[in-house]
Length: 158
Image (cartoon, rainbow, N blue to C red; front, side, top):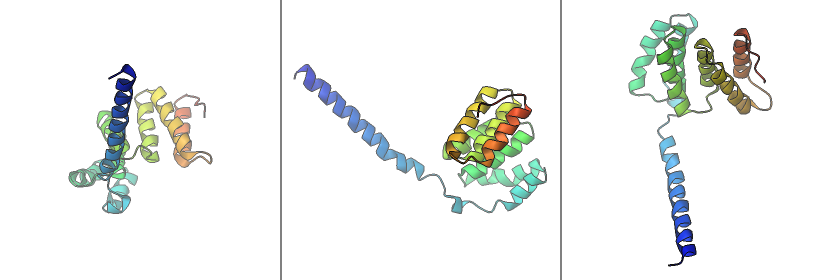
């Protein structure tokens, strides 16, 4: 076999492997529950709005045994962040963004977590991503994170 034939064969194997990986992606995405599969989170949200983060966590945490959804994980992270349990909050924001990388509330709140721990570069990166997701009209999440950055003494570019 010539060198050119070997190179074509190697290239074909790489293309086949990439196609196999791409074909597997929808199967992984099937594990993510659509929003309609979420249980009623109104009591948890009410506890959060009331500032009763411990109660919210008591209601939310048992759901993690059966529900996999970015909204659930985002609420858990939000409650933990407000309790200043930053490591735990970071873990749950990561989970939320694993299940929905374009989850704007999780990106905004994770950005606020980054501000709280002094990692302004990461907060600004989250703001950039939210801007891309909200282009061209903008969105509330971008406005809130930009305001939080400004309140922390930063001057975000966008």
